[in-house]
Length: 418
Ligand code: EPZ
Image (cartoon, rainbow, N blue to C red):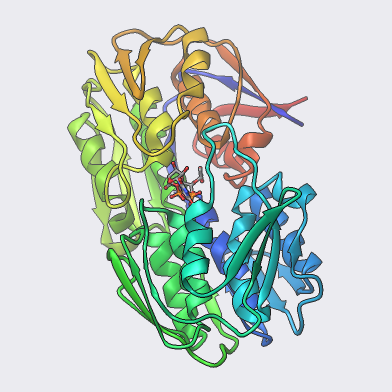
């Protein structure tokens, strides 16, 4: 069923357990290709993108067993080291198998990931990095082929711009390269740190993950390990905003507050009460007005681009005007047109949006365009006057596990309809 129907105006009350992070689980699944021994991954959320990645691994020769949130994966040998178009076109993070395939087999053939709604999203920096490690890379008939028949050679890779999956791809490739690799201007996201922890548990030698310079000493081979995926900071951030927007009180369990520093700081500025309860829970509520607070997206530890659309939903209810500047992707304002259908007043000038606050949105029929835009529309609907129907919620299912169940569990009037 591909629509959500939401009756706005309910305060959310209660607690929600946060799922494992989609953007940590995707590279973790790809990393299992680096060894022929069994790997166990815990806290894998049931979201569509991970099902796609699991299918891709199986097409490459992996045997995969699912038991709740646990995956047991072993790739004794890799058959075709090829990620076909029909899989890659549905999930561009398939480029994460590039590094592991070249490192393990000396060859990778991956369909060029098309752009997506939020931008062109090339992977030129992934390819330039693999070439620095000695791979020859060529593109033909919509496929990228990377070859390193004699294995990869450690080198210094300085990224022209910070790329999260580019850092992850190269970190995985470098684990089996000969000698030392240094990644400069590397992404510092928690998901990069989580991947490095998993690779080190497999016998890799990685230092500095989470900082701008990461050092990797290549090793002969990696062995099996068990790894528990970190909590999804973007899912958690989405629920923090849901509570602030509806004026309720939510406690989020099994989350790492340290991964949400920028979002928590902005929510406090906007007037929400955010309490960090020990290392794994956050309580959020909002009594007074929502104050207008400007946000500019930045790479971690800055305000995450994956929270930009959700923040805009909150700012439509603020007591004055605010500005949102998107610096990471060139087309990540698709949610604006849909918020406007609900009565929001938002002006766009290049990568800057000005949100006029001070009025309550009204329910409407709207359409999701990409993963985080659909989360934004859910949030807006929770606070709007009347009923909202959101179409094309398969976008939401790519990155949120059972969102409507979790919301209904804390008092939202939401149901899935055809
Ligand atoms: C990751 O995408 C996340 N996805 C995205 O989350 C997130 O928005 C993004 O990082 C930024 O934080 C996963 O981790 C699976 P980038 P990624 O490479 O790695 C440009 C979500 O909603 N660039 O850091 O693809 C690129 O076009 C998704 O969960 C190049 O030009 O993003 C973008 O403008 C959406 N060449 C910027 O860099 C390259 O080779 C940052 O992209 C690579 C990137």
